[in-house]
Image (cartoon, rainbow, N blue to C red; front, top):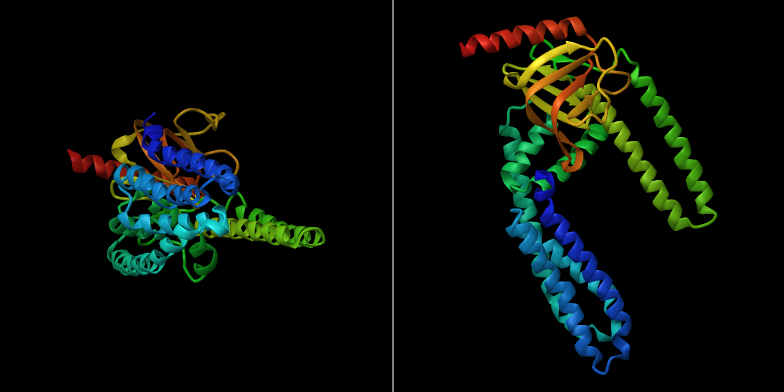
Length: 345
């Protein structure tokens, strides 16, 4: 219920946007038949270019705390949409509003440049070893809009791991107690096989669709390439984002998909899985594994929130995970857990 309430402004804006654009398309078809077509076209233009940004401001900026500057791209997109919807011979008001495009673009570019500089400075200041966590914290320090930051972080993280992380190395076990979770299950060969199959499929589908519709062929190819990049980025994140035991928490990562920081204070029990693990759809259960079944099930005495891709969050009370070196993992977890309890006493 809390999650739904948090997303009500976004859902409300999406619903209002859908109604406005459906009505606009219908009204635009009737403009030439109206006795005063220019007046109707002006009203339609105001709905698309003024009402939409105002709704966005009220629901997303005021209610959700999104940056005020984000109204600028909404206005620019609204102008672009209006140029397609409003009949060309009745775009008098729209032509006047287009004089605001240059100032809005300059304002937006200036803000983006300043944001990039400030985020880069924050990124250098943050001490987290994980690139995704440092990037999210740095952007949130600057933008203060959680959903926008989550979306940006997911996309930048994806392309970083897929294209620019090949010289990076996994966390040094001598500097941080980290555990891989992909080697014993042979996840690398599985991913390699899927990537080869995807590459062949993209080429074949492009060739087939090209004979029928070249534009559709390029759309399908773009989607296929994005899927290829996504899987490649997730695979590199699996290698570079291990599960780690820190001073006061267990940090569980599963590629780009989930990150959960589990404070020792929230852990009720850690038990090896001997029989069947909990079903994936069990309420409050997150199975943080790649393939097979989890090695351990961690029960929590208080719920925590796991961070997923593109702003997804899941409140969990039970966590399933697997590691390559089970004995070392148990030793490290017990040592740090005991050390944490001794610090409290």
